[in-house]
Length: 238
Image (cartoon, rainbow, N blue to C red):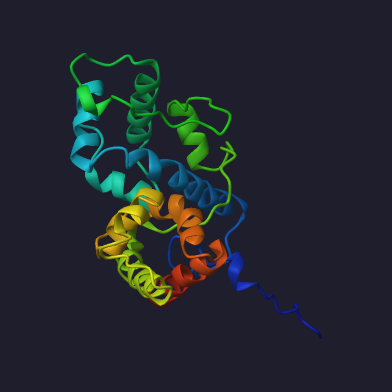
């Protein structure tokens, strides 16, 4: 009697990217929702960073007339750790997003709304409550590109170690990043103001300026990403 054959799995198919390893390989629904949560994170993180957390909470309350969205939910969406949000928070976010797109909000909000953009698909379609829910569970593809990024929780350590790497690289080429060449470098790549000064820089700003920093150092974007990935590999949890 041969019995049932041993079942084996590729570990990458059942280790959740944004969480701990699952005890069992996920089925299609679970896999889909994990991917949906990840695409939602990529959408929500840069959108929410248009405000400070208190600013976003203030805007939401002013537009919705209700304290429905909380700081823990903002952090959870941005990091991908909020796995099962309450339906009303997705309803609230969708209504807030549509109001932002249609400019249907109270007057006098000033900088809370000036220059702010809504969450949209890559084709420019504004996402309401239904679309945000469908995106979160992976039923609606947002067409987001698979781009390099720096996780929210890793911004401080990446800024510190990548900044040190850049200071050494500029010095090795005889570039006075601290005094004579500082203004020129920062004008070319604004993220360098914080990176060279030992300050935490938002991941989106670092990603945006990688091509310009590569030009300043006469190197490739890949070389710079290798330095960042080295930091991530040392500090991201197993």
